[in-house]
Image (tube, rainbow, N blue to C red; front, top):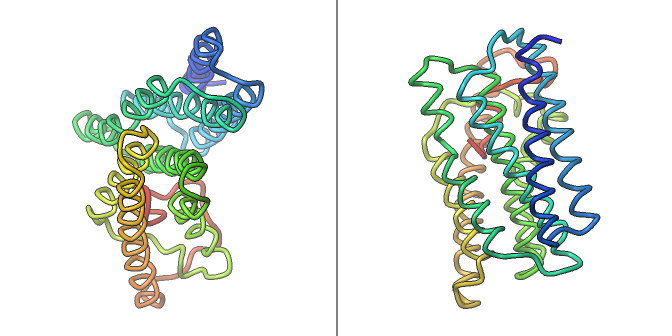
Length: 249
């Protein structure tokens, strides 16, 4: 195995150590351990597969930053799985989430500064963002109702729609608003998860975040429909696509 392909394994090791530290505090259930490790193993296995397919020769600081965020998402996933059966340390959970959200965009900035931008890195970043929104919506759904899951599932529904409708797989043009809406959704979910705001504010924040996401996704779907005959349709979904879906970006 090439040296660059060994880099994601450090994420698994670091994640396992992080899970051990949280578990030492008695904050993880068996389900939490399993969920965290499954995420770390599967996500990094997919990353190694992507590195091989792209014939990458360097992992790079930008991908390393995204890998660190992915490790944090693994810890967050473990805590959320634990929350179904027991209370979790909210300060630790919120701290991990805030750091993961704050680092979003840092990897892209590093890639631009070091001129190491790649389709693989863009896809890796987007998948980490998408899964973070999904697990956060699962946690908040326990408080406000499972309708909140729509926030985390929209991007996956967008991808699934591309199988029966090939025109949905056409690369989208860059749009900064996608990044803004994704950031707003993550911040909104974190605010509600913190339990600092009154119940009516929680519902208001979630409805606003959902409305923004629906608007952004709808705009992208309409653009794809209007331009469905402009370019040849891809035969299948490839492992990498920088502008694969509307959110996250």
